[in-house]
Length: 252
Ligand code: ADP
Ligand code: MG
Image (spheres, rainbow, N blue to C red):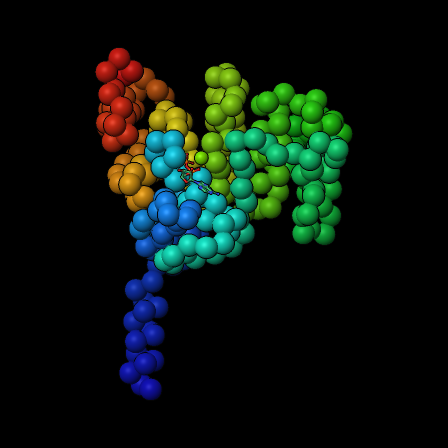
């Protein structure tokens, strides 16, 4: 008995102050015969911004869906601590509910409408609260989708290529917004993207998925806000493109 108490104390001493918001060990996922994920090891800390890159079909969305608890069966360990919210490439707003009602939908909160209104203000959409989703521009709809995720005060925010359908200018604005919101609320973030610059502008770490596992990892220790013409940015872009198997010639 005494030995067991000693073991527990030592475990407690060795553990970090806060457990990671997501901890994955040896995660595997198959669809029928096709083994998409073969052995994923990943930890995301609260306040950490992680970007996930990889070729189309490499299993990025599959990993994100596993973290979101949207896909039942997988092998290995997956522990998520706290509230999780997801935003997808399509904003997935309910067309027959106004924007505000969309944000408040299913929200466990003493005053869902008030919380939803505050979230809309935060993403700069306060004036569109009573609009119908189909009257929003692409950028506005994606802001609404972000507001719907944020209002849940997630410990882990999962973003699956949420900006890829936006035009370049709208993307810059929404990148800045995401960076500001992340700085203020410090959730752990996993951002799936195929855009190397997006990863380098936003994330602390970029992971490259290949052959069903995390094949490469690059730390991005650049001060924020970041600039694409910074020499270190360009060097990291070259490194990341090489890891992705894309020739950086002509792009840097
Ligand atoms: P990515 O997001 O990296 O483009 P996905 O995670 O969507 O890739 O898909 C990885 C692989 O798993 C693809 O080959 C895809 O066809 C397959 N896949 C994804 N979801 C399903 C599903 N529900 N049923 C069968 N195969 C699937
Ligand atoms: Mg995908």
